[in-house]
Length: 386
Image 1 (cartoon, rainbow, N blue to C red):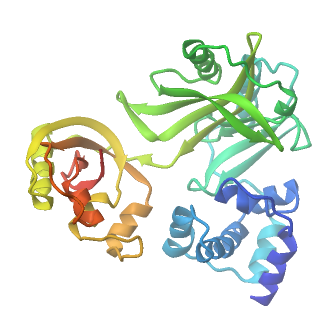
Image 2: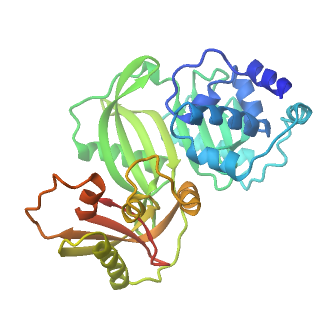
Image 3: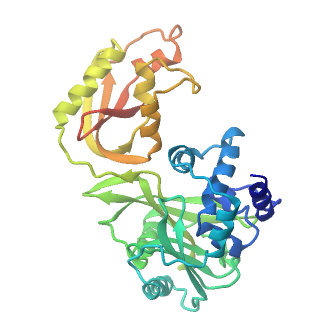
């Protein structure tokens, strides 16, 4: 391991700016753009990720749970120094990456998107097939209009279906801040236009919100509009699968800062088996176990949710974050899977109870709650207070 430690130390930069997320933290540690591409495309990534993620967890840096589970605890892999060197010797061989979209098709898609968005003067300088280490090694094309990563436009296109994964305009530093005198309806028109120009429709993504925000951009604060769209399945939106666009509007001219997809909960598309009445009964029975307060109203709707610990903690009188959870509970929480559920809201009759003598868990037990009831198995996947 001494040789490996020295090797990692050699390629990792000593000057790392404060990152916005774990992925940026890892990738910004690599000295050069070429180094990033070489390492992202081979097995050494797992060794580096293992080392860095372990440090992040033990030093209290959050957000590493999924990567730690997938890359370390679930499937730990170890490589000798020679294996790493042999891997690096073959990093330019991408024939093992399975894809359905060709390089030319990806370039055509990227060019169409740039033209539709009004960036007709940009031409593609490079295209590289890579794997997304944070998304089950999904293949994508990294397309750049400049050899300098601080200039031009960078587009990521899925090598599986040709969908755009992200669009980054590195020339945004020269764009004036967005106007304030635009109403929300007009802003939605602009954001809908962006969606259409990159190839999505309202049947696929549902508009949820558009807000004006101050974002940091290369040591400057930029006033931009941030529009969010949720992916929909049979009319039900997945709150964990989001397409976000950041843009400005000046004199009716649209300028893109960034467009990007996030997927924090892969939808399982589980079938509907449990009826509304059955789900309500499950929730009501559990509520009666947790509190003696009288129930006044119960409502139900179908949604997509991930499992959480809310109800489990109440059932087991777990108060602090340091309390132990069963291993199977932790595994289910870490897999990032989203399922179709009945969202059951349970509301109690108002009372003048004295809550001063109740601990925090008992107060939550007596509070109005939302239950997530699996629409296939009737299991309680979690919930929240409302």
